[in-house]
Image (tube, rainbow, N blue to C red; front, top):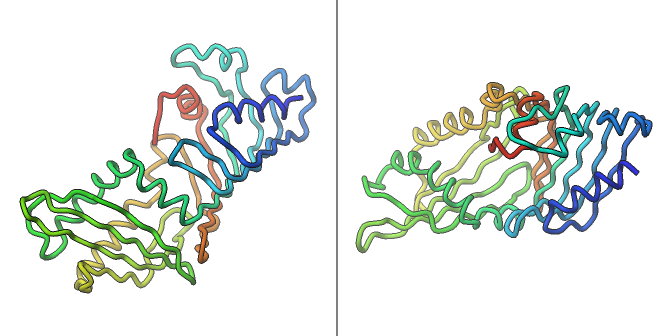
Length: 255
């Protein structure tokens, strides 16, 4: 009964899901009624979270959940919903189409444009003018490499378009940060100096360091990252403090 309740609750929050399986292990009914689950496993395919955000595969293996069910039902203001931290193994698969669709959404586009603003200003030959991000395209390559094509339009009158292509390998360093491997960058099809590439590599390493989430009560370690010709597979271990988990469920916190 408990797994059906959880499955229905999840389906109600999704625009669409092709396959969703929920399994509760080692939890008698009287424990479930108290909000205690020894183990919860969720396997899903084709999750449409919003109109422009789709996940090909999402698998969760959550250990020892202890939630205050009366508080969860009421959801009145800032309430501590969890009695223990949440910890889970997460496996995520995204296709090229999934990522490129998400990159075209207005919200993602705006945040990406803001993040890239400082990078653009450091590129030789771009001048001091502002640029508007027109499109972003990701292509998965072999041997854990990918290519990212960015197209910008200068905001000044008669400004030319700016095309940036980054091709790089990606590897995980110490389970908590991403490192670019043999990156190649071209501006309007002209390769840029190695000095700028070194700066870009350092910037990405610092930006993608998961230790920055510790202060927010989220501990993440990357166990696996593989890029194939048509999909990206990621496996993580995640632990979320009970106060942070409560804030996320209450809609009080966004990442």
